[in-house]
Amino acid sequence: NKKNDSDQQSAYEDIIRLYHTRVRELFAAQVKTLSFLTYLLRGFTDQMRPYEEIMAQNVISLMRNCPRDAVSTRKELLVATRHILATDFRRGFFRHVDALLDERILVGTARHSSTSCSLEQASLRPLGYSTLADLVHHVRKELTPAQLSRVVRIFSRVLHDVSMNMPLSMQVTAVRLLLHLVEQIVTNKDPNPQVGRDLLVRILNAIIQKFVTVEQRVDGLLEAVEKESRESRENRGDTHLMEKQDTRVEVMSFNAFDSSYDD
Image (tube, rainbow, N blue to C red; front, side):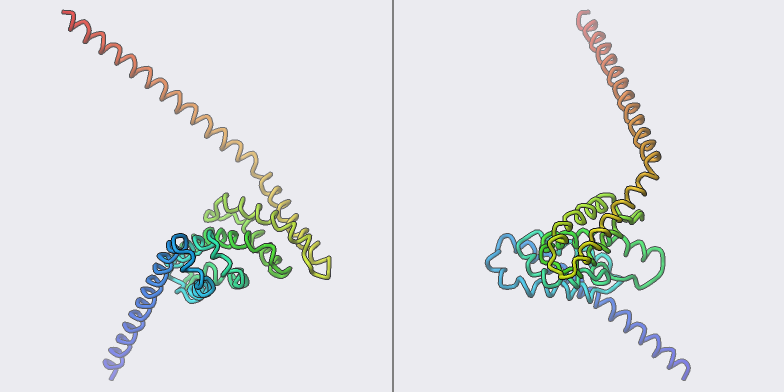
């Protein structure tokens, strides 16, 4: 009986592993199909226009249901989404802003707590936030105060993210996006003016705190820049010296050849 129970448990585990494998393969195939469709958006715009809404809806569905450990599939999904947002078909995503402002949907959540899984999951964040920034840039005039608050919260945190996985270019994008929101916040239609003032103060505080952080690292940054500049000058000097030596060798070789020819 114990042997039968063990065999059944082993068979069940094999079935579960096979099921998860097939699910990941299915999602990978669906995302690759989406990547193919993005190439049709520019060449067959009129034919693809009726599917604008359903395409955006299906992209959000893929983001919701993508397996948490399928990091490469989600990365490809985010890349395809950015391609769509670069076209007029981005309008289909306007009604899904709330879903994309949920980071659990946008970049997923890690299933395991291991370092490798955490690093893989963290590598998605710059791409996810840049995709969200593209959408917010186009839809910012239609955002509600509540949505603006969530955008300010997300990109203020991005601005102060000092992890190795958050490139400086993404932090620059966060600053630009926050500044672009100022006009929309000032002209928001909320009957309570304090809502807009609070958002502006939060943006101002985020940028001031970033200045404070940068100030603490100015000396180190200047030293790094000076070291890099010095090494660059030394490399150029070595290259110039090698070029002079090569030229001298070529002249000597030519003179030797010329002498032998005269003989």
